[in-house]
View 1 (tube, rainbow, N blue to C red):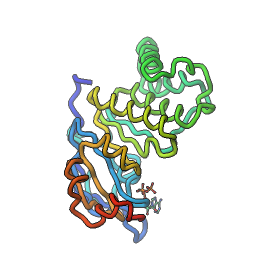
View 2 (spheres, rainbow, N blue to C red):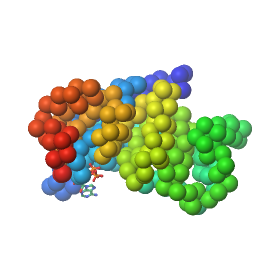
View 3 (cartoon, rainbow, N blue to C red):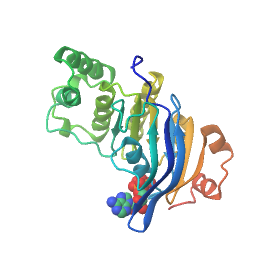
View 4 (cartoon, helix red, strand yellow):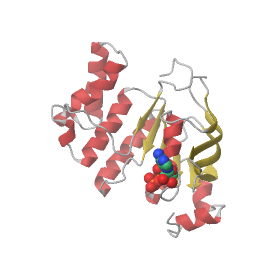
Length: 239
Ligand SMILES: Nc1ncnc2c1ncn2[C@@H]1O[C@H](COP(=O)(O)OP(=O)(O)OP(=O)(O)O)[C@@H](O)[C@H]1O
C-alpha cells in the first residue's frame, strides 16, 4: 500500500447530480483528506448514498468534477461496501477470495489474504458456511472483511450498521476503527449520531442535496453553524 502513489486527497468540485429536474446533489465542493474518517450525515433523502456512489465512481456527476490525486478516473485503491452487501452463493471463504481472483492475484497471495481476513475478523469458524445463510451482522462483517482483503487506501461505507443490533454494531465499529488505525481512509454515511460522534474526524452534513457543513467533527457537534444541523442534532429534522 505504501509504494504506490496516493490517490488522496480526493477533491469534489461543484458536483451536481440531477434526476430530471430534481437535484439529488447541488454544487458540492469538498476535499477528502488522508487519514481523517469522514462521516456523511443528514436526514433521509439528503443525498448521502448518492454522494458515496459518486465518489466511488458508480455514477457520474451531471456537472462538476471528481478529482483523485493520482489523476486516475476510478482508482483501484478504493472500495465501497453497499448498504445491503451482495453475497455470492458460495462459502464465506470463497466470497473473500472472489475479488482477489478478479484482481488477478496469484493463488498463494490470495490464500494468505483470505486466511488473514478470516482470522482477524473472527470469521474462521464460518469459513465453509454459505455466506447467504449468515446473520445480517455476520454478512456485514464479511462484506467489510472482503473490502479489506483488497488493501484499499480509501473505503466508502454506506450505512454500515443500519439494521444491526447494538452488539453487532459495536463489532462493525471496531472493524472500522481498526481499518482507520491501519491507515485506510474511511468515508461513511450513518444515521446514528452516537456512531458519528465515536468515529468521525470530519463531518459533511447534507440537507436536500446541499452540503451545509463540512468541518472537523468536534466543531460540528459543539457548534453546528446551520439551523438545519442544529435541528438534526436535536432530533428535530426528519427530512
Ligand atoms: N434513480 C433515481 N431517480 C430519481 N431520484 C433518485 C434516484 N436515486 C436517488 N434519487 C433521489 O436522490 C435523493 C438522494 O437519495 P440518497 O439515497 O442519496 O439519500 P440518503 O441521504 O442516502 O437517504 P437515506 O438516509 O434515506 O438512505 C433522494 O431524494 C432520492 O429519492
